Image (cartoon, rainbow, N blue to C red; front, side, top):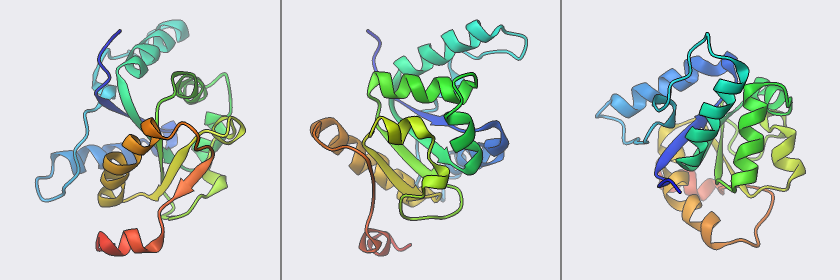
Length: 170
């Protein structure tokens, strides 16, 4: 079994510019946001077959400690489509029991079902919804993930109260 220490960022292809922004947060020393990027491992090429890409996605997810899902209407649609790569990722995330932080790209601080792929809600998966901001995403990765691992009885989507955002200066 491989050592799970990476943060995997899952997103619809329409939202790749936001993933690139997260990479910039990671590189900017003035922003306190750090993650081990599972996308840089086992790179899949555009010329790869669908099965090869799925195998590499599975390998990446096997090294994943936690997932940040960029929550958007496109992610909801593609994450619920079993033929899409995001749909495959969501299915594997649920099967592997990996904690999921849904970063709502529309700025929602609560559970926004228009951003959630149906498999996450249908499986009643314990998730944490936050706004798409580095400070609250980092907070969720630091605080929610250990709770996820110790609270096997929690199910469904959760979100932080406004007071948590206030304490973080957001």
